[in-house]
Image 1: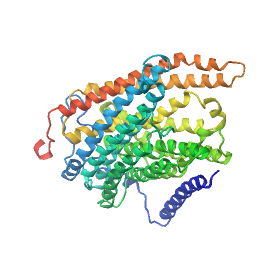
Image 2: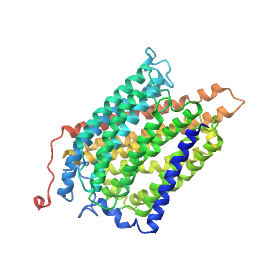
Image 3: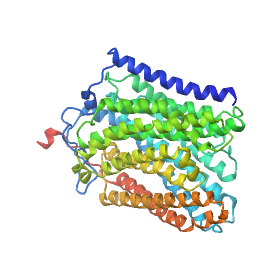
Image 4: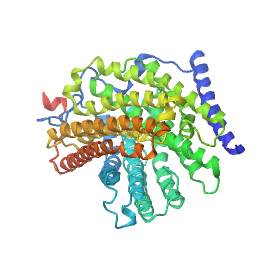
Length: 525
């Protein structure tokens, strides 16, 4: 294997190991103290013990249970860039979902929309992937970071106009990347299809997101960094390294290029989208319920476990390929070790929700976020098991992996972001949702739709893999047996897409609703 790739793999592992060693040393020498009271830093005086769900239920006026002039001022500064990011992300969610549905239908209607090259399956599927990853997930995730970071650091967002400039540049880049893919101009690697010339604009836009967050972190008015801040700050440092290293033209070739491709593709989920989703859930689950997470010390174990073990997970996608065995084995070991941080997150988030099940009935945003957090646990467990060679032999090259990818990127990250958006929007706009029933409709459409989508691909994928391994059966059997499962996939995808349209209608509704002034305690009295 070329020395540059070996150094890259070794460097990412050593850096994470050194960081974990430093954390252990700092705790042992009391340079860092971890106390359960640190979990309460997300609450302002008077907030604990009260459900924070105003603005999402029938008859709700926007009446905060505790008026806080400091946080109100912080939110007012964060609101414009956050709203811009969520609005743009929603547009790309709907557009990307339509392309995904078209690609799904083409798997069992191959002659449908075959009159133009941009409408072929290869381009539709690639457009869906890139528009959802860069248009929806990344922008909605950054919006959550821009909202939460100033709140947990008790200081206003720095340079909010720079964030808006970054949003404009990011969306121009997504448009250019989408047009390039539709025309057949790509870099030819999964998750890296956008031409590197357009990637330069994405990188510039990303810098406009990172700089204000770092300035805000440096100006924080609290000594302790709540665990969500750990995830967010790590993500905005990890992703630029991943993105730049994978997109430098001509740096990688051959087997090394394939290895870096999956190093990047899997780490986009694990070191970019996962920190955004887990960090968002860590903030909103206790914040909505009004009670701190179950065990704060366990939360840091989850973070550092992710940092240590995830960086090499993606290479298990190359099992059976012309890749050195030690690289694949390293990936399998890291995949199995991911049980550690995932269980740590599960203990904190699921126990907190399980102790307060009453809150699920009262808060629609909490339903989205807690269900998404549960899907993170399932997706991670499934991914660790799928990385084992005995399981991978069956599931590799099948639709099973497509179901698994959506369990992580959609059922986990997207549902958490849906819930976060529903919680943020009333507070950022000063308005309540005019049609609260549509929030519940959205939840059931995407939940039922995803269940149909996931189980059909999982069952069909296993049968497909077993058929391909059976030397007595022709390869065509592995294709034809998938027909009913692909039809079920399209049914599930249709329900999910309808849910996304309902989500867009909810956002449009709150944008057009009359503004409702917050009620201060003295006014209520």
